Image (cartoon, rainbow, N blue to C red; front, side, top):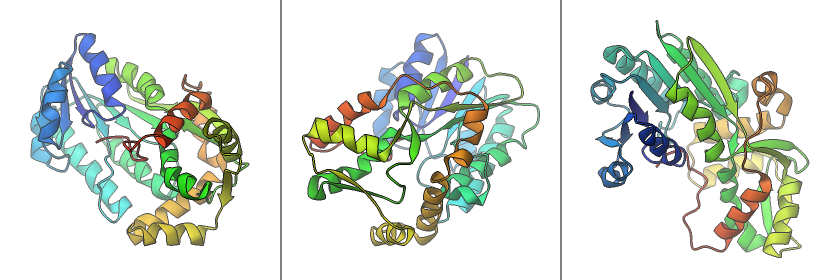
Length: 304
């Protein structure tokens, strides 16, 4: 099959793309960076350099493809909801122009909810727009929060021996590794089911207190603490670090929503999703490496 993949060689595509190539598929990887062309071609794929906001570029790239894999980058402007809708409309137009019939979209947990989900509502808006396509097979992959989001705590662990969060330390949250998202996405790309499919992905479930307890041992840091902060403190921290007001407010609302796991994981629990292979103990080892490294571990890891 001929397949087009958004997401360059990010942490999911670096796993999925080589597998698709090895399976004999003709894969085109879309990247905004010309510097990525050589590495894309090195894994046996074709590189298409352009932006996902260019409907003509996407239409040309999608033409003749049996399957298109869509994913949202972090760069959707200062208004996450307006930006998400605008991007979804561009994708929809390009898919229609290219007469694509099989589509896999990397969405998110919480995409089944309205504005109560905060920033995650952007994925609800994208799914809503894509569902307007006629005569297509459409698969949504909804991962939980990335393990890698926890790398955002490296600085305060090093300087204060503390992890600050507006989520209580005893609240059980589900996390996922790129490998386990890839294991859900790959079969959907390889053989997209008829009509509309929703698949969730997660690796393990644990509380902040469990995370801290394991880190204390591996980092030899017995005084490490999980410190719950207020929504107001979280909002101030985001805006003080230059996060646009609307995005900051939506992230705070997402944090509130995460404190209600029953709602957040409703579709995941309803589908009896099986946990993946990468467990907390595995990530703790990776986190320890990140803690002792000079950099390279970031919380934004979906695409590059």
